[in-house]
Length: 94
Image (cartoon, rainbow, N blue to C red; front, side, top):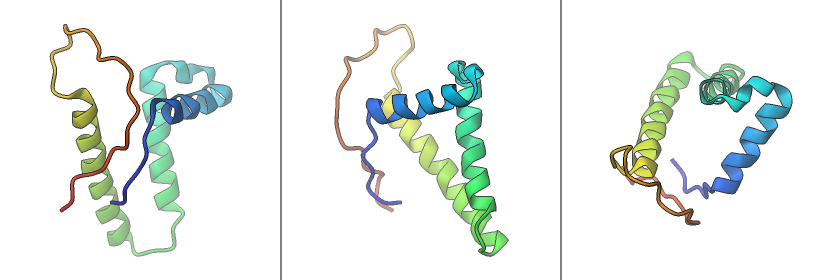
């Protein structure tokens, strides 16, 4: 995967766009369903081999898991959230 600049502002903007389309997107479950469905939609519209689509989807799933774990930091929920920060997130190189 390529280097990305993922910020709270970008994520909040994406959520705002989803909420404009569907007010139910205020709920976490609906938001993440829209994001997942968007990935499926974009991949499904590509004129590439189905096995390549499935391979990419598997890589994206693993990538999403890595980002979630990195952002989460593996800290228990009872701890106070960390203060907001800005930075560049880079996927681990394979």
